[in-house]
Length: 579
Ligand code: ADP
Ligand code: MG
Image (tube, rainbow, N blue to C red; front, top):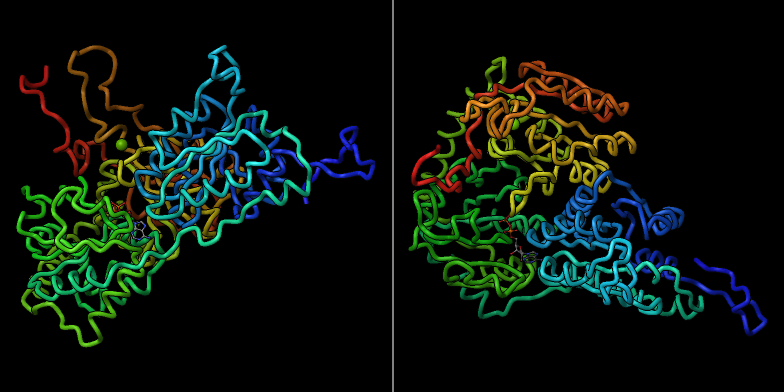
């Protein structure tokens, strides 16, 4: 038990023990099962990190808070418990905030604990070291924000943060720790009594029977039903019920990117390879932990999207999500496991399968698309195109289904998402709802640390640059991470030219033929260079077998990519043309 020996403050003469803010905070986290902290040390939390490590928490130090925060966010998704990020005041706090907002946007539990400067000075704006009203800044960017001023409130403050992050729709929570809180002293026994273990932090929420009946009736009336599985369905770890629901209803399903693998992408009912067709044709869509946001054209008809006639059943724990973009004909508010179980119960074991002609239409489209793709994926072109390079990485994941795939970039993301099949739940970590570039190395570190499985990161060269310095962190902790940098000399393409004719290269172009592999070697990891799919396959297999930190510089044809990958249409266009 943590304690500080009392000295002259002992008035009883019987050696009563004291504790302080440092120890209470660590004890409160441990009491609630926190095993890992991702952070960057500095004033005023350096000793907090040291003491947490001494107390048996794994404390992983990063090179930049944003990456530590992204690791905590990914840990939240993978473990269903808040990932903890620890940062210094103002600049460190701000660096961590992007990840906190990202976690909140993705509905993942995370707690950003940040040291801050003295309240008295901050509130009078007297110019303290790293002065900032961090609580006010954090509030609009997360689900909840709390500040603890007294040591006796640490227990309840940590409990509130944990419950806020996990209950209902999960999200990011900010916990403000003024530096002098850590040194505050109180009686050891009173301190221990003040700690709070959170009971049932994410209570089940059972949907109402009427809502279940309404949903089941609508599904029963469908001629072309479709299930959309989102990352909320992955997050909840109710894998068996999800599988049972898909298989018992026999309804084709479309996995959103981080729901891939919830059922194997090679499953008979997967409609992934027939995405455009099913979105356009389905008459009833059952949304399971997925939102009708930009990623699904807001549920409204456009050239690829969902037509206005489509009716929706939506399962979500957040009541406000219903009707966010279009009318939800059968809203089912509750936790996914309870909602799916209730629907299965109502449907019974003799539930009829969807009409055969719908299943045939989906199957034929899917098989056609898969066959058309297969030959493209087998090319051994050098320089590599996306199909050739991703074709071999698809084989790597098929042979190593337990590996976690981290994926970011533009073309590198869009092609990898559709080409690489996933076979198990929560094995794909990507840029999430915002499409954040820079989640790469943080996600790799969290994936390796939280799961113990090997990690394969498929990174655009630009995306990698946002967190590339963390290769040192990966080497320092000797994590089984293999990073493949898709090096096409730039953003989208490496072939753009400066239209002014000036000396600077175009805004989207990087140093030609950079050797990212040498960055890994600088820290004692393994660097490799691949110029063809065959070389890439060999290099990745070697890396995955060795379990050593490895970076493979994969030389991609600089002309192969598209502007903004698959979402080029989101770019505004100048009406007077490019000057
Ligand atoms: P995707 O991007 O994969 O479509 P989203 O992040 O848009 O997924 O949607 C995830 C949804 O899952 C959110 O609306 C969130 O409220 C919901 N969700 C999270 N946890 C639960 C849960 N336990 N039960 C039901 N819904 C949940
Ligand atoms: Mg690039």
